[in-house]
Image: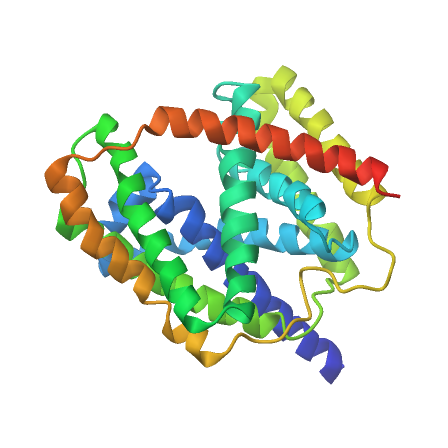
Length: 312
């Protein structure tokens, strides 16, 4: 019993940390209007984010269960598990995925959530923290921070730009949550993430109920998305690793302390760059970038599907 309780504690750490990391890239690095506008008011907005974190806790738990049960240990499997996470994010509690199908099947669920949140933010960035020297990490964090300042300009088309003070609040509070999430996710990854049978039945069951309840008014497209999700799950099963390698959910070693000490470079770079971006009105072509991410997400998704069926 102590061992089981201990493993559950590590799973809670992994789920909470993963939820914070994915929520950061999904809502605040992306600058989703509602959550970003709320956080622009400062730390007083944190209590209102509890429901958001709860939802991302469910999404993260499902994602980690997929990684473990399908023994995902390569990029193709991670992309497909990330796609499931993306569809969960945009179809379980909000119907964003049905706003313009079939394009919205791939952006933001795959083009942003799978590629940016999961592959880049949750996996590759944490891998770099374990493998790169601190000076390379510093450059990477600075680049990500400056990119954040430029990406913030996509919101200008929907209203007034965030002031430097509002952007500062968003950056400082959300990057603080991100840093906590990284630590918790890495602590949880010290042991293999292996969900109990109760978790494996309860979490997907709850997700299915939410999926049907949210998608029923759009039932023809819900059926189409269900078929795409079924194909994805079958591909994950078909390509499940059986060579004894650990899944990407852990176990893995902690990054060095210097990697965590470099984290503040990211928000600092964003805060230094944004006033220049705002003053000079250096807006990025957000529509073109979204289109590029849509095609990239679709291409990488179907590459992953093909790889799963041809790699054995």
